[in-house]
Length: 299
Length: 331
Image (cartoon, rainbow over all chains, first blue to last red; front, side, top):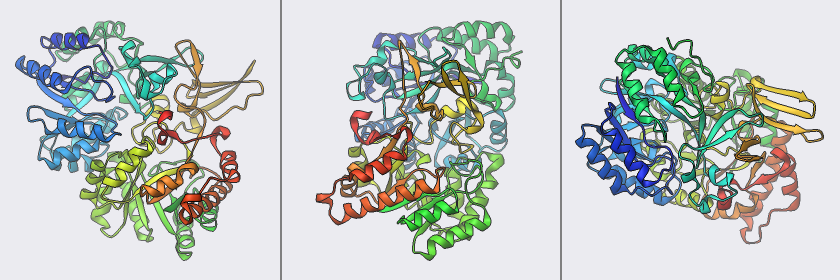
């Protein structure tokens, strides 16, 4: 199984972004997805910056893709998407069906990200005919469904699993980070910059439940499949996706690298948990509530 | 502008038709539709009656087959499509591209509408469904401002339906996993959000806690009316503050912008609420009918009447209403 690094879901200052990708160049990850997939107002990194970062990573031997915005609303966002899909250097990860339409119309191969609902074989086969090269299993689907899909997936289509990260659970017209500061989205003052791993939302009895990340809502716990790598390998999963967090990502990538190369999971599991901002969950993979955490299968 | 109203059972369907709906949308009694609640929806005989009741009176009936089948259940979705087609319904409302692929191949004459659950917000996205499956209408998610809706309507190759009234999803439909994260039951796969099976009301010393699969969604003090724990409408702590962090209990109400919706070329107005009572369906249908008729006859002098606003307010969540994302400052 190869390791991929998903697009940065948060809004980081420029130096942090460049530093992150400088480090990645020397990491064991084989694939890197670049770009802004959450909010079009986040423009500290320009399209040409992403292309430059992509070229450097490609020089270091990485497979590089550009991720598209998940929720499209304004005409200007569709215009940016058109430019992204028109680039001739990197394959695009489509996170909305508009991107699929543009890419397939241009005869380009593409990857579908977590924003695309591919729940059955008929949908997979349809997109395979349109140029689907790789798809990310929707995060709410479990091993049982993955098994069914893998047993009959179209030839030449690779499967990627969201392996580590706070789960992208929902997108809205409303910016919740701005709302939490009593600001409207049109005057958000880029509050997301203050929360490099999103802003915690707790229940009134103190349970860390969700994380606000602009217009996106995430799980507070970090989804981790580290305990299920043998099952995923046996099912023929091609790629494991690690979603960037502000601290600890380089070591997290190494942990998954060691685990895929056969290192015993118990010690790695403990170290991994210590690197996560609010603990782990893995319920989705086990056909349960996504927030559940079962580490009995870790060994 | 066509008025499209919800029905979760035969009395509701009759209420919708009798009060002036141009079309009524329904679902079957399983997880193939996004209102999969116990005691709700239609099976063979009642479904046949429903089709006749609507069509005999010159109204249309649409069937929502708008959840996302996984491989082991795909045949159930095929059966739902076949049953709707066999009974000669006027349109199917579909979300999953695999189900659309099946429906347009097996029933080429059956009219397909893209469900709000397909999460399509752009003309480019609409073209994907139009070119691949010949869909003839799209229902837009409740995430676009009125200006953005106008733009999509202008560019869209097919007519556009929007939500006009009802409970408000604040997340883009079809891509919201909050309920499945907390309960394992997802609108996408199971057809329910914040399902009653996982709800607990607990009396505490100083009021009532409402929980969803154990997660505290809200706490109501003595004398405060405890609301249903819909996940996105609870009170949570962010930083120092406890508040409705995502959205308040409120319903969408577009009476004040009906002339604008007409002007920009919206083809149909949808009312949410297949899970609601026949009384709700009757009341909302009657108000929306009167308002749309007034708006079409004389858009320049149209104003929402107080009695309409009161009637809709009384059946709204938290008895309050909003323009939602249509109105930019809401965002």
